[in-house]
Image (cartoon, rainbow, N blue to C red; front, side, top):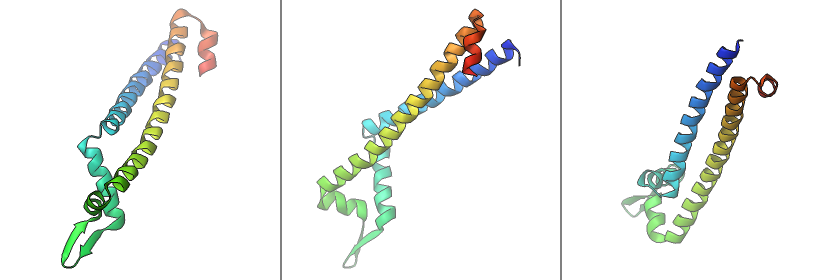
Length: 122
């Protein structure tokens, strides 16, 4: 592989990593801001696991029942579920950022002619 090919390969991967990091940050922001789609996702999870709750001839979704009967339990479950998701997202962002920094350093080393450092990153 030539130096130019490696530089182009690194540049492509850097763009991919930046896009992935941006997407993960958007997901993280949505969770942190309690956007309606995340609330809907949590409700769907509860409903899929539990199914419908029947009271006499009436049926209710489990998420609706939990929200209205024990809002504290609903909120605790929501927080636990999304805290775990946030933790996973933050770990992924950290890993991708580390890879991004390494590639940026390798690209810098290649451009400056510091081949020894560039070779170490491969």
